Image (cartoon, rainbow over all chains, first blue to last red; front, top):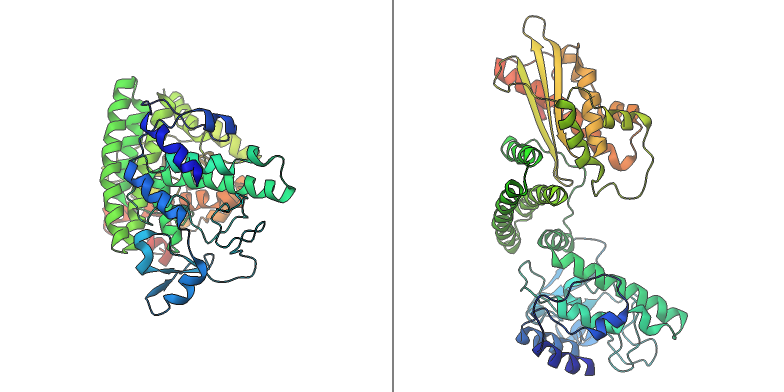
Length: 289
Length: 162
């Protein structure tokens, strides 16, 4: 936990627009560079609090048995979520499968979270920890700008495989997996569309990859936009379409947040379809620009 | 000009992010991809034209397939398509336009995606691209019928859905 203290002064002296994420960068880049992206102080504090108070598996499992729990529909996710604890987002409860460790494999300190708070050993991946938990965030669509970057760098400072190259083979493997998972978590949550798809997956609703639709209104619109992109001859025209897409995306992100918030998953899926189409348009524009 | 436009569409296709690992496609896919047949558009307000517009939302693909029908005989005299999507989707729609030409409308409704997929030897992850082509044919016939105000006799339930 000491390193959090070390990060805070860095945050105060950040310079704008300097850092760029390079995945799989050597650890040295994480440690040398200052954190330059805006991370609200309060949020960071909030996150730190969470990491100082990691999920208490045993107590949560027993003491809250009378509270309302929700069982996830996705058979892949074997844990129950205690909805009363969503507020601080650290409440989760393992289903108690034997392979899941609730103690550090090295020093036996209970409740390690990605790493052991006591000895710093990297722990094996616990799949009941979802991406939102990794970043100490509530499981909802809207996340504040910059709430991921700081945590992402912090995790990489602790989990990066370069750090454990002198350790045992097991721990090196844990570090490789954990660090890769944090990268996945970061890239998934950073972009609204992938975040939306991930949220739906956590609810047990998968986007059907093979579904075909014949909605003339939507498809007609997309066809027109794609033709416009194809015919656009200068970057000005492309930029104009791009800003239109951004506007549409913002609108549909809101629609998704509302639909998801009210558990209208069918509607949420529809908004994801729209967003995917607009997102594709943007990808094409970027290729042409 | 048309050629140029086609190349542009194709350019979009190859870089499709969903073409993940290097995979070898059947030469027919490559052929239809490099030389797609019948790219273009008919006037969708022409009463002899049926337009099928379908999409695969998970990939962000969109496919438009149009048929021109001889009102006397119910025979499809011409067909064209425009697809924004991956190579398999382009090849599937290109094959579909070739296959529907010169056929009766009832006949084309029996074209199955599995036949298109088999013809192009599409890998399992690309089967839905051929599905898109099948749906596009059905949607085009349905659109033509709707314009004419009478359904084709042997329209199957599935076609009605599409």
